[in-house]
Length: 385
Image (cartoon, rainbow, N blue to C red; front, top):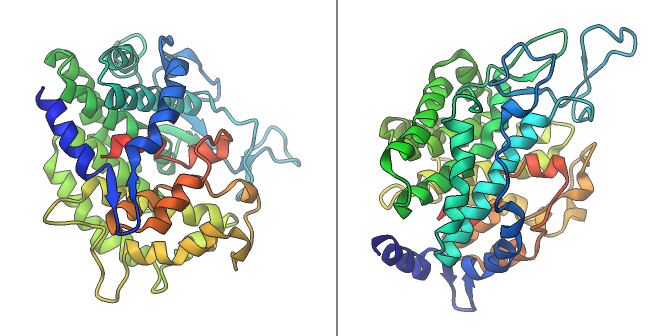
């Protein structure tokens, strides 16, 4: 009953945003979408990394493996090392593990959101076997590292930038928070699940790949912070939470955002529109995860005025009207953006901006294209509140 009471209080405060014009309710917007999806993700057999293996992987069947998106066979040396074609995704790369982790994201997000809406514990009970398969059972669990992600044939067996592939575990961690609050899982089983995230968090923050990803300097650094924040929150690691707050203020925001609110490192890529949207979303995710009553990152500004609000002001006109985009078009998928960008939602609720919220509500919520889905860490926004 304690969880239900807290939930009802949250409904009346955070899930709605009231302005002088109208009232926005995230719960009302999401309810039909979630309940229409719940049967698709109920009673599924768990699918983990152990269900598929690529013979190009240098790891074991328990190791997550993926290949660099923009790397292709060399037409002049077909059996030689792959060559880079920036912005052009190779459709023949191994993607089974990435798809499996995104499916876990959907299962976790749908079932936990359904519980938030209905209070029916059966949804969370259906989630538990998936969590234990991925993070506890010795026969099916994933090793808590990303040593073999975004490998390149003939060059490297794995790279630090592959860490971005587990950004889809963020909403899994948030779903586990919902599960923990429900008190339907005994503590020993819950702690076994959390232990995996504790070990992975340690790897992310100490291994050379994790350090390289943290210091990458573009959207990869932001997504590293999103993951560390979410996993640290789940396991109660306040030291890492405080580190990420400082990292956002002293590194991510001042070093990546220009004085006009744009992201120069993303604008210089071959997909400047999609990368700009992605990075603004990721920064808003950091703010959403790490803000406290006494330290709200949405309100934080550098001495020269850079802030998440400035980033929203820069990109909003081009989300509303993509035809006004003054920079080069993305080499792929330009027509598929935007969708329900989380920066509009989180910023709209915090700043009580109905223009942002109305636009978010009217954007596509059923994005299915693989490229779009892999660049959307927020698929189930109820979990973020």
